[in-house]
Length: 222
Picture 1 (tube, rainbow, N blue to C red):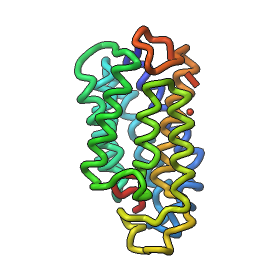
Picture 2: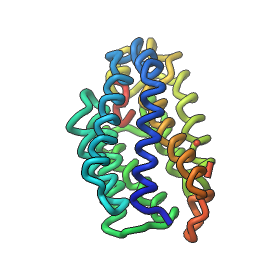
Picture 3: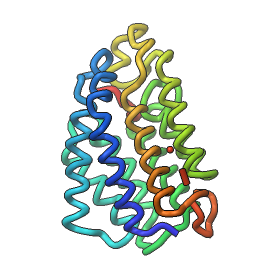
């Protein structure tokens, strides 16, 4: 079972990953976006960690809802609304339960991903964060480790694509050859999730008994 502490650990680990990779995310964003993806997310997730430490929500849903609100209010560009929507919708789907199964969390996260797709009007293959979010969320029904790998591969696969949504789409064929920064940061979330699961003794997200493991939008490029 996953409790509020697990979700706080996930977001804290994600914040550390974003902080570590901020320069790389900005470098990826430079040729096809506003060159601020890393710095924007770094600021947002730092604020999320500070807010969670101050308010300490006591349910998984409340943790994610609060984090989502904080990202929307802190992060500029497209990233704030998109990542904020992902976490808020996931939190809403989890409801007020004090603990949830891995399977329930996987289903809620998929609802969050669907909300991102609706907000950004994008689909897998458009060279956005959905290229990592969708395969990651789908694989989460199997295990945390599988979700990490699926999201990672999804991010890598954006490089040869031509962007059809977001700022990068304005570049047309010139967007080909650049890995999408939003998909890359989305993969970091799954990596952090898998690391958190491993540290807390969870291995298979699809196991409702709670054994669990290892791992930009609709318009991710800003």
